[in-house]
Amino acid sequence: MEFGILAIIPPLVAIIFALKTKQTLLSLFIGVWVGATIIYNWNPLVGFINTISDFIIPAIADPWNAGLLLLVTLAGGFVHVLKMSGAAQAFAQVVTRKVNTRKRAQTTTWASAFAFSYTEPVLILGTIMRPITDRLKVSRVKLAYILDSMGASLAAMSPISSYGPFIVGLIAAQLAVIGLSDNPWSLFIAMIPYNFYGIFAMLTVLFVIRTGLDIGPMYHAEKRATETGKLLGENDKPLMD
Image (tube, rainbow, N blue to C red; front, side):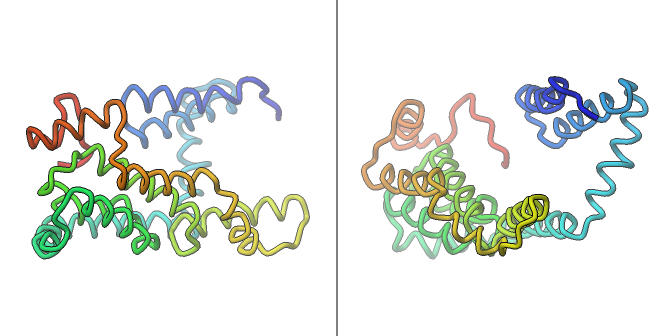
């Protein structure tokens, strides 16, 4: 069945809801619901029921997806353990004896991302490094920039992260569709040098850290942090306390 231009409605709805509500899961669910409503003759009730029965439950029941969900859940639990046990604070007290400048703290965060490329570097490394960067007056937005640029880039290129096998699965599915017998893992490794966004994003982060080239809002956030000690701006809305 062909839906033509109607096919862009569900992703547009999901994006608009995500921007308005900042609730990713809810927005994705609504996007799927809208898509199912279109598929089932514009009946929202039938669309809602089939969203659960035909899309969400089969997706969760898939062993591959279930494994990814479990990994992400465990990563979130590990972050909470690090926070509640005081392990991150204790680590910060030890590390700040040698990492005693803002530039060193940022460089350490950048380099440590490679050691955490097997898991969720944005979450776990952020929990570990936040007390260190806080002590040395690195703004939270600068820390978030380093973590996101490094974490997303490494996740897309690391074969031992939760995302590497997921990407390989997508490649394998496409190979099967077009009837090729190539090894999806070989293709995944071969395409890493062509991940120009990820490579240049990581190099740019290091360049910004070493040169102190902060531009626009980042410049003002860093200036505020160093001069006043305020790591968060008045309008900043951190995802974690």
